[in-house]
Amino acid sequence: MTAETLVLASLDEALAFGARLAARVAPGDVIALSGPLGAGKTSIARGLLAALGLEGEAPSPSFAIVQPYDPPEVRLPVLHVDLYRIEDPDEAEELGLDDARSDSLLLVEWPERLGDAYWHDALWLTLAIANDGGRSLTARVPAAWEGRWPLT
Image 1 (cartoon, rainbow, N blue to C red):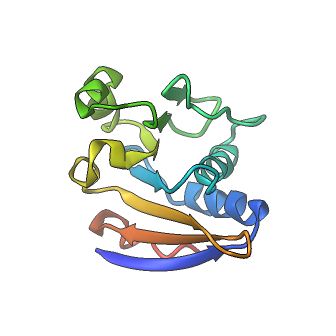
Image 2: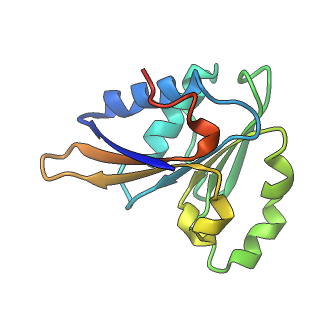
């Protein structure tokens, strides 16, 4: 597993980063988006979903917990998941994430709610808010992403 840190200086850069991710994703991939409230997790997800063909702005899945997107709305099946309100990892079993991993892309905000081991094969993106208002993004890149990383 390798790690890399990038700077996203603006909302537009976060959206563009998500779009670059979209060019590399496939069913079965998991992208874990970690960081504090307001760090840009949903912005990256929105950029990715727009690049996959979603028209209009993707809602934050905070209240729905799982927001599904299916073709032809997007190029491949996607589950945008927000685990912020999950208090016990056992609650996640009801979400059907294990089954969805076989044929969908999972975009998971607040993945730490289920622990690192649950997402052992995920591209783990951790965002932090910098003093200048930009975002620092640290990527933990698993073996499954080695041929697709770094993004260009």
